[in-house]
Amino acid sequence: DCCDREALHWAVTTGGFNSETVQDVMRGAVERRFGNDLPSSPVEWLTDNGSCYRANETR
Image 1 (cartoon, rainbow, N blue to C red):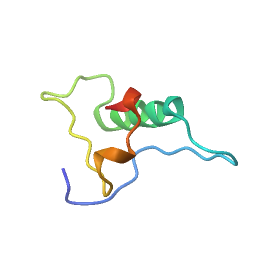
Image 2: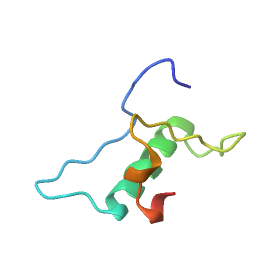
Image 3: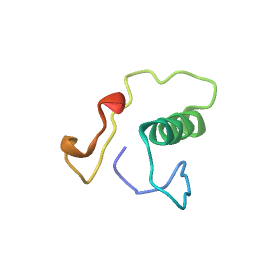
């Protein structure tokens, strides 16, 4: 839900982020939130930025 801005997963780098890093963070967030259970409905990814900032691999 959008009631808070809790960071569920993160990555640190001295270089840039690529789509693989972003996908790993997304998977980590889902695993931390839902554990081994599947969510009852599709996960909705909310962002402060528009879709133009997403890589094709994460759309």
